[in-house]
Length: 223
Image 1 (cartoon, one colour):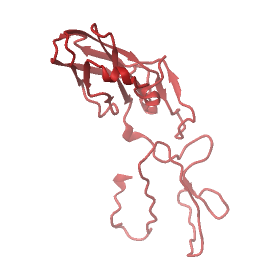
Image 2 (tube, rainbow, N blue to C red):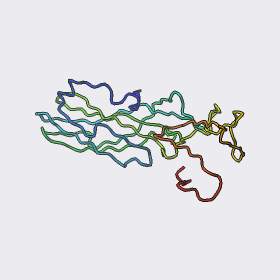
Image 3 (cartoon, one colour):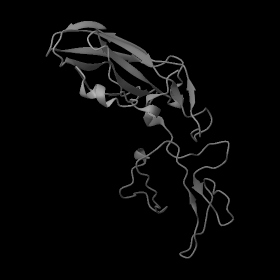
């Protein structure tokens, strides 16, 4: 079982093979996004920059499915679960010939691993292999995608068996419950425990007045 591409990347770079390569591939990697935003198919351009005709073969090798969450726990696992559950990848054409200087587009379509639980937003990945009969070198294109809708991912941890969740702490160190009234003074301080689940580039935390019906700049639909 191959390690996922999100862990190992494209692998080690062979400088000699890179300098003597007779094939150029574009793009060099495929970011498949999540299920909702994934394209129906992807195109890859294969170019023969050598001085000999070449017969090309395109194949696929899946890597481990990575699941970093578990049901009933919004906090991600400290160690992801890896499983031998791979995407179905349809490639056309898989065999073709290119004369020196010629290029050809291949079409690739991905079907996410069938056993993956979308609610846990697991990540599938693998490699598209490109080989030819001239130099027998194998180039590979790493890919990765998320199963499910990433928009549904929890940003703040509110439910976890450990009890370490996001919330406002009272003077006694207890979590303030919904509807509970607190008297806050200028000299008083109430710690806010912020526990993030999935990664976020930036997190805003605003203190807003409870009086009035119109809150300038506050749109609940964005939260």
